[in-house]
Image (cartoon, rainbow, N blue to C red; front, side, top):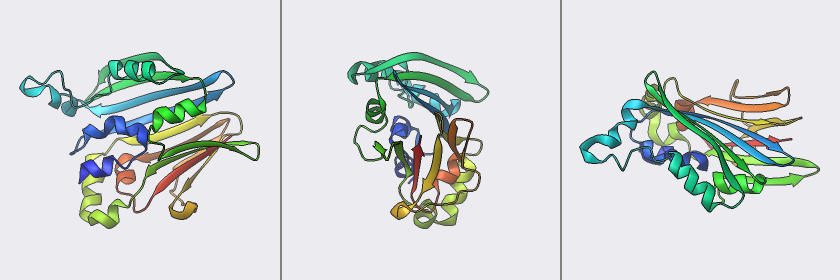
Length: 218
């Protein structure tokens, strides 16, 4: 069950799908559009004990967490208009913390990186505004798994969060549910000072009872 729930998060997290079955992880992604391209700064944390799991039984070449530097290098080489600016990974407490910075020629290339299937991330200009939409979660965890599932996921992912921000003058963000209606997730979506951001505990997101889509405008 955990595997299918994790795969329902925004496509950028498809990188992290193999962390299923109880692994603890969180991420912080910052998008900065500019006249000469778009930068994505990504930090993700995964519990070290799960990162080490893939190194057991002589399987060092097949780690449980596949999104290493070589993965990003291959992606940048394959996706035209993409450049890997920096990559670092180190242990911090009980977590393996990885930081990646990528540069894209335009927003369309960023969208292709985040969602190669073209299902969960989209970009358009409308009435003089830029609109970037990201579906973070498609189905309700509480309704399909019940209170027991919600309690388990919340406890398993305690201390980990999903955070996305967009830095640009006039940036704003709203969270939408089914049918494109606004949903109120207290304290999750905030904007000001040229930055719009959304942050939610990972356990709450994975077990949220309904779809969650972010719509950034600037």
